[in-house]
Length: 310
Image (cartoon, rainbow, N blue to C red; front, side, top):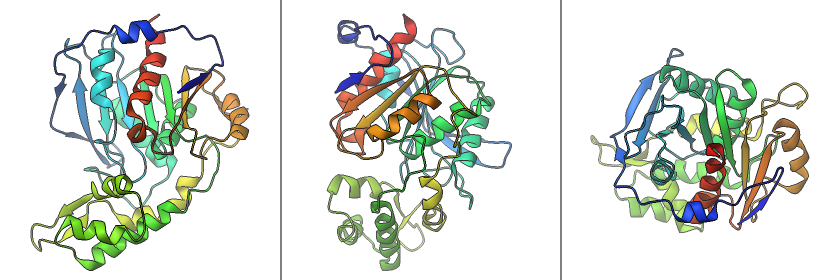
């Protein structure tokens, strides 16, 4: 993993290595919050063992926002809560996990949901961490300036209009095929998806959305495939076009997988105009940075967030 520095970075390796091992953190069963716009967002709250709360000045909260077809379970929340002694909220966005389904699915709507969630929970100066779809959502929130954000970590996405890989369209086709087949076993669903995706880890990731219908006993996806299929073009867009009209001057870390094309070198000048204080962390991985290289991501995130305490 390599940092490209926009400003001098202090070396936190020794401090990170010496962080004491905390007892098990407190993780509640998932909760949900109904927002004023009618959407209900489900979330997990991971609290540090010292009992610090999000309202404490020394423990600003971290909010994880997953990617397309992901959920609140796809993150490193618990580890960061322990190492940084900060409460971590891992949310399900609309149309994902245990949250509401709604035909509208674009970055403005996703950003509004998270902004309302932060307001409902009175979370200020939060660190937003987002992957892929979640990264563009977090960047949109930062640029909208509707709620106070302390810092931003964007994982393998950039603030530009860029076509999604064709893989996502194939995933939709495969998931539709699974539902049409009315599979009784997850292994049968996996066999169908194998025709659309060779990678077992990616298929397992997609299958985390599979649930058994208690009435029929068949496997079905808990996410609204129809809505998300229609939103694929929206997921390629970015709502802000002109960096001269919107800018976030807070601490920003752009994490990119060096084997991924979502944050290309030619995009860095645009990133710098939207986020003048950004730092770049390169990790030798594909688009699924956190799952492919969890330790490298942890180190990059902890190193960056530790700077806020200095």
